[in-house]
Image (cartoon, rainbow, N blue to C red; front, side, top):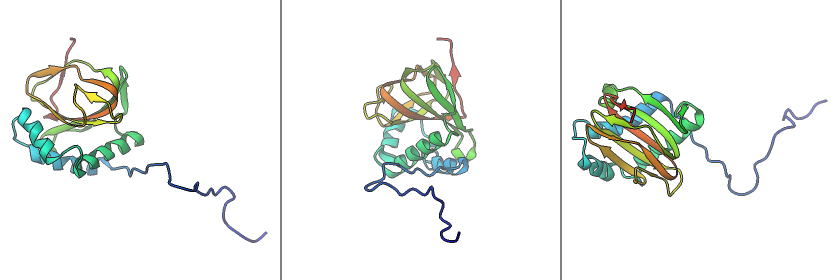
Length: 180
């Protein structure tokens, strides 16, 4: 028999641009390092509307750091280590526990599709990075960008208009789910 060692199942890509988007998967430690570029900017700042304005200026939705975090989240969801739990039509998970490398913030990520989530209280506040998957998707009425809830605030997280990923930064990981 001689000849080629090439297996008979080799496929050639179709002509034209490739429709597949390659997203390299980031490990948790690398993701923590990436997020520390945000948490180091907000450490010690008041959890209020001025923080949202600060984040919009420092890490805008159209900027490279926001895009890098968004792409890392999509790749991690596709890889199965982010948003690996599901309840009530919401995929979710605590990605990183609070610690000094994140200035005391925990990181949770949710995947929501036109759904109202469970009521909860933010004892120390909450910083949300809104990443619409569908262009019209909003989180609590906000499109792509940052939303900040003050300490003691509460809400039912709501995504309307399609699908969105939302990354939550919680000081000391503090969140209290209620029966409301």
